[in-house]
Amino acid sequence: MSTVNAIKVSSYDEEAVFEAVSRHFEALNVASELRPETRIVLKPNLLYGKKPSAGVTTNPAVLKAVIRWLKSHGFENIVVAESSGGIFTAEYMRGVYSASGLKVPGIEEYLNRDFTYGAKRTAEGFTVKSFNIITPILEADYIINLPKLKTHAMTTVSAGVKNLFGTIPGLQKPDMHRRYPKIDDFAHMLCELCETVRPNLTLLDAIDSMEGNGPGGGTVRHTGLTLCSKDVYALDVTAVRFMGLAPEDMPHLRAAGAMGLVPEEITVTGDAVTPCSPAFKLPDTVKSVGFDDAMPKFLRAPAEKVLDTLLRSYPKVDRAKCVGCGKCAESCPQKIIKIANGKAAMARKNCISCFCCQEMCRFHAISVKRGLRGL
Ligand code: SF4
Ligand code: SF4
Image (cartoon, rainbow, N blue to C red; front, side, top):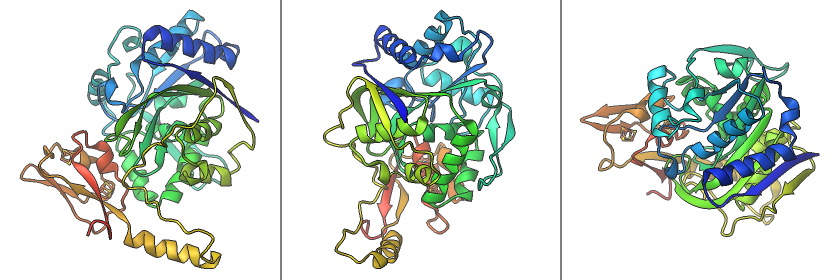
């Protein structure tokens, strides 16, 4: 049985967020797991540098509140560490920190300045034998995972488990997409990564969330909630239900279930969590094609495969919005995006529909085109 604590918070008012963090950490008895010398790493979601009101990144008020709580309890060995989309260098991350509102007193003293990484072996029997992981995470005694609740073009939802993909250094992330182009394999890899990193605590920022074409180009939706748990899978199940969606429709939760990682029983303490109505809008990339019981079971899998091919989504550049920054090309695992005459252009052949390009385009210049629907 796992516990997820829920606290409603109506805004990013610093005192209100601090009170919520305090209530969470007291409810889960976090202080009992820490010592003054414990190396604590906070892992926010900083997909790319974007102002906090855009709903793309973990809000600075959450980071500030967690740091304030830790310091007030005598735990000062703190680092805020993340590897955003893009390269993992001091200069690039300085820009991300600054644009995301983290260069403020109470946070900036704790921002990671070590941009090295190392390999960590996985458990026996895992598909991935070892992951390259950023050094602060490798050296941490206690990891506090601080995701933002968002929809996601590839994984449908980004919450606790998906946030840990940002422990893989820089442009090695597209390489993982290349190695695991199918969503179910990618989702399984995410669970293996999660089991390798093993966050001690996850605190979800769902005060403002993102729906639609997340994780970068969706719409902000005020949802006024924070969730906290020592079990990241239980937290993700609770978050998905809160979005009005079904956990069994989420590739990473299906993979986690198959690996025996999803608890059978989840107790939600604190405030009541009622599913959002209407449910979160899904990304354009997520197909809503399924077969009911009218179709014989043995025909469903092949029929879904055919439809999957026919309805497969591809990225499409809106040339009017494209500024030719090249971020999409940098993050494309297949290296099929070229910048010509100041605009991006991609070859559909060899595209694995991972949507890293759309994810990294902060100008919202990449939309989704489906095989049949787009014709
Ligand atoms: S599509 Fe977006 S990321 Fe790619 S070059 Fe154009 S503006 Fe930049
Ligand atoms: S073009 Fe976009 S969707 Fe296709 S492989 Fe490259 S990054 Fe992925």
